[in-house]
Image (cartoon, rainbow, N blue to C red; front, side, top):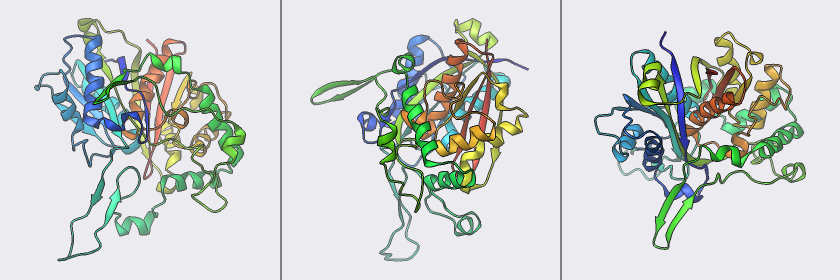
Length: 386
């Protein structure tokens, strides 16, 4: 089988909701990180560009990958595909790119983008003449235009409610969730992440502003976390402090065959291994990584590096405890995760894969990048040291 290598990676800073990057369109963000890779490797022309994006109802424009190609320095002859598996979209872009190389491509640029700040409101077309109560939804996150049969069969729990379900089902306390959230914040290493960040320049009448730092990490304490309300359920445990943020960002990386590595002078960070996806109950969507890893026939102890998306502390702890890992296992998100850094839906999976690859260059033989997915799925990708 053709070997696939993960090479250079660039990402924007991760912006907070309504923060510095809220002024930047998602297609422009995606083009920016593509051009950042071209700055590292001038003249590189991939066989295809594949991006993940979860929203696709506004400026991300149905096929944001193609829009990004046209906005970038790539020639218009480069085709592009946008994939959507909600939270795992950016990881699925990497998986799809690896499969393309195994089918004969030499170079793929894979990535992900999401502007949750700029997600639009959407309104259904009227189903009767002169209707006065249009159905309107905010597309930032969550359900919209719900099918009544889905609601009857599975319910329509919000993402925080699914975390509350896991906390109840797995006896995960508020104190343990807050302790994990504090670890996520304390593990954030700005200097380590800076190597991946491609600054974004925002121009206005007042001049240029350069955004070069992740906006979401913040100083906190167990005492401060304990004071936050748990608004999603009476007697609940899920708070804004032990959940991921709503964010804006883009990321992209280069995937290459062995011939592509040699031809373009690339430096592999990791070799792409097997991948799997799995379905789970929507009400406990956060357990998806456990099901996906089981489909690979592997266990968490098979990995030296684990990058597990932190949608919620309850979700992380449900997964790690199911794998038999301690809550503070140093292999899991050693340089922090989405509780501190934020979770721009379509981008996060690409960042996880790139972070796992970089960590492998520092030691270890194998890595796992995995996410849970809203409406009940999980995706897992294995990476190997080179």
